[in-house]
Length: 321
Image 1 (spheres, rainbow, N blue to C red):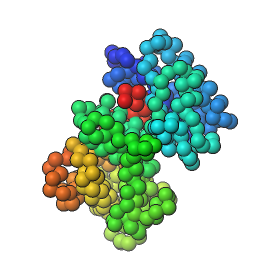
Image 2: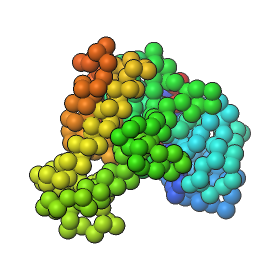
Image 3: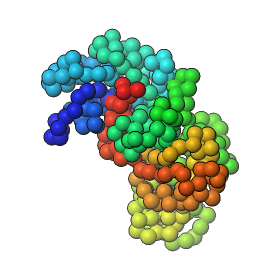
Image 4: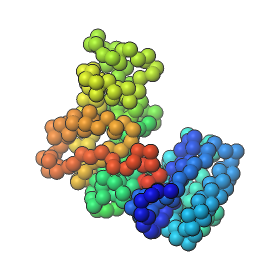
């Protein structure tokens, strides 16, 4: 139970991951009143939905909030916001499509909204985080994959099926030599995801004999977190890895700005924990590459959502759409 004062209305946020499903009751300013999780890998999607609905009902009753919950928001992979279904999610144990919105509404009787995790992050930032008060911004989610959530004139850009904003799969010349898991070459994902940064580290280590504490780490154990630690220790090669990554992000941001004219671009996710190691070269590259209309007019910010609860908070904000 959160010790802060609580503010109605209340929503349920659900973060559906490949291994676990986390969920929480959240108030209108982002306080988590109660949180729990269940395994995602269950015998059937019906068994998973029954278990989840039962635990959510128990949580609502324990908090004496029956009749006071506005709705449910779910952040899920390959979520079609229009149909309410999950489509072709390869990291989930059940066959697609999965009519998730219908499954939750029929069990709990609460309006349910679904979106992919990047779009949920964008709404979460606008509701509780760094984008509070902003009407035009982009959230770049930098983690296992690279995603994008775009808000224009105060509205989430969803597209025909809710798949708008796949910024990680926009292609650029700086990544033209890298193959993406989507089957194409040059996607931003291949340089700015955790895997992309690890790939850059391996490449720079093999192409240079410069001293680096990264050489003491077995190649298979290299991670962005270890690169960040080395860079913060003053390791020049590690800094160069983030200079390259940040410059790629800045060049990409210059192109994205021409499409949406944002007030801010917000970095969200584990890779964004590198902070100024990414933001400084990103700003520099943006200024060098952006059309004059956007120079000095776009802020670069880090997410203000608590790292451990960011996905849940993003999902919990969806019913406010």
